[in-house]
Image (cartoon, rainbow, N blue to C red; front, side):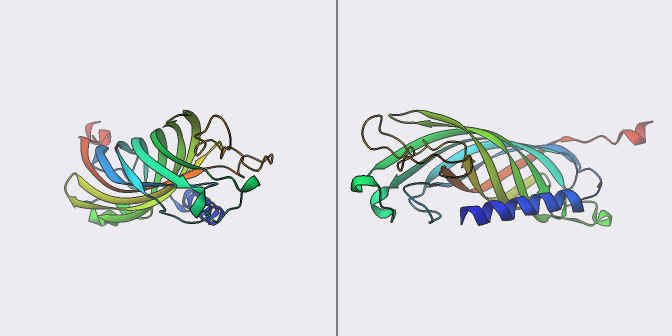
Length: 232
């Protein structure tokens, strides 16, 4: 499931780069707001089931709208995840079992692509006040607990956003965070650990941990864009 999601998201992102052309800019340059939702884990203690043992996730976000289609986004998120090998369906060496609970902080940056020209104005340019979008980027995750863990992540996600009225945007977003490490679910410093429990050397994209975030977002536009061509 994770491989299918990763491959599909990358194909959509590359296709968007090829199909998108130059479009006019939105009325406002920036957006700022927050989000609330759930976070859940996938790894050695949960191989296949999305949204298993969900925890709460909250945070803030900032966008810079490049034009109707493209935007840069930064986020600061706090969340909780948990897992238990007894319900994972996996068999570990010597029938060992482990469980964990984590709180984490994420700081990240992404680039977004809107499938439609997103605005509640400029109808003559084919704009719409609703659009699906996809995104990817790079982030860092700090997971707290008995064994603090810091690692980089790559977000792969999709969402929809809608202009409720001038300046106010409502959105729904789902993403998977690919972690560059296998210690997100490893809480024990001694004894059995979920950090490479089978003792098998693996590549960057194998035997690693993920977490997902499902969020409702609310942002406010500001920083009106000046068309400098009108002031020459």
